[in-house]
Image (cartoon, rainbow, N blue to C red; front, side):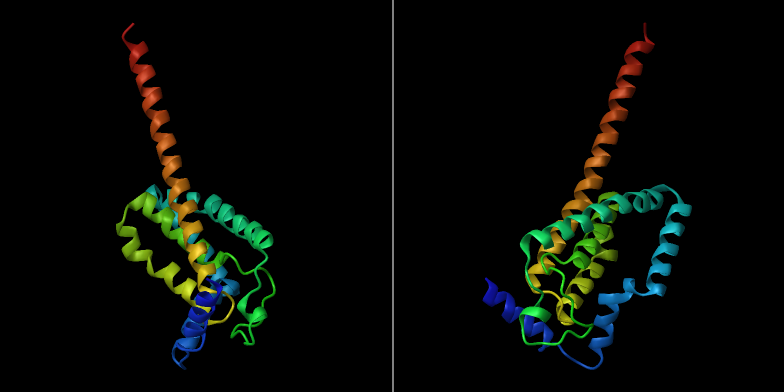
Length: 191
C-alpha cells in the first residue's frame, strides 16, 4: 500500500507540475493561512449568519463540526505518527517543509466537512456547488508535497463523516423532539 501511495504521490507532485498550475495549487493549499483568506472566511461566515434560515444553520453547524474534525485529525496525526512526504522522501515541498504528522490531511477533512454540512442541509445539489472545494484542496496538498494521497482520502472520509453525519444526526434528533413534544401536547389538549 505504501508503495502505491508513494507512486501516486510522485505522479501528482512531479507529473502534474506546470507553471500555470503551481500558483493555483498553492492558493488552494494555503489560502486560509493568509490574513486575507481568514478575513474573507470570517466575512462569509458573518454574512451567512445575517442571512438567516438554512444559511444561518449552516454557519452555526459548521463551527462545532470543524472543531471536531480538526481536533480528531490532530489526535490521529499524533497517534499514527506518519511522516509527511516532504520529510520522508528526498523532495522539497513547494510551500515549505512541515514536520507535523501527515495522516490524515486536516485541510482535506475540513473542506469535506464543509461540503458534508452543506449537503446535510441542502441535499445533493450542494455537492454540485461545493464538491470541487474538497477535491481541489486535497489534491493541492499532494501537489505541494505535504501529504500522501491516502492522507487526503482519509481526510475526505473523516470530514464527510463529521460534516454530513453530525448535522444529519442533529436534524434527526431535533425532528424527533419536535414530533414527541407535539404528540404529547396534542394528547393532553383533548382532556
